[in-house]
Image: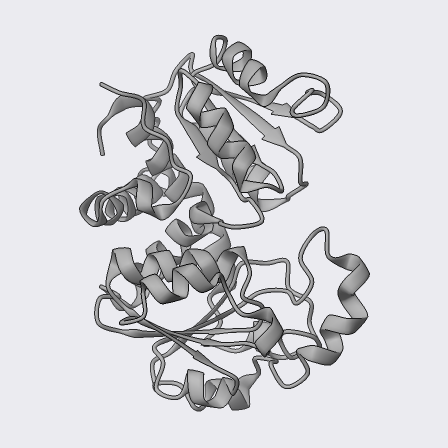
Length: 303
């Protein structure tokens, strides 16, 4: 069997993605019932972090431990990734010693190059262009609470960033309509938008984008590495805050998601995280279960 990687949602078929989500729900039940299930005993995950993260590290490390395996944390100080040693060489060496590699970094090209020279599966745990693992958790959360997302409308409010790009891919793979509300200078990848023109529509008004939506999502205005733009972004994104009044324009049973960490008072209002429509904490927990389903699939071929 050829090595499978998970660099974007397009690396899986729609059927495989759906089955991953259903498997994640089963794995959640297994864990919550206290049942011991260790399909990855003696398997090792190398976690390469060029960008720090709370949820990504905890979810992958806990997931491997619960599966009977081991997760090895490699900080920027611990690797020569792209500094002195070519990525190709790092990939060859690291993949000869472990069973799967997870990379959280800046340039998407790094994970593509690493995967091309790796003999084991490589998982994109976030790049500046895509965040597919978060989308697995988001789609699992919606499925748990509202059933299939096919044919529904999702509204993205804010920066056309890596999360927004992954939502565009998700619109294709899960067959939903995506409304994106963002300032003109912060639109998502134009090629992606053009490719999914039948499903994705850009708006300058959050109110228009959210009207009738079944799911409303946002993210911080300044992502990691963009701190110097914080003031400018605060000015540009004024009016793009998700709050209960904006949510009232969505469908009656709409859900609100945020990949966290949330900056209350900026992209969301102070009270939005406590709104009953907000499912951000269930969404965060599901990173664990969705990634366990992904690891199981990539390493055992079963789901």
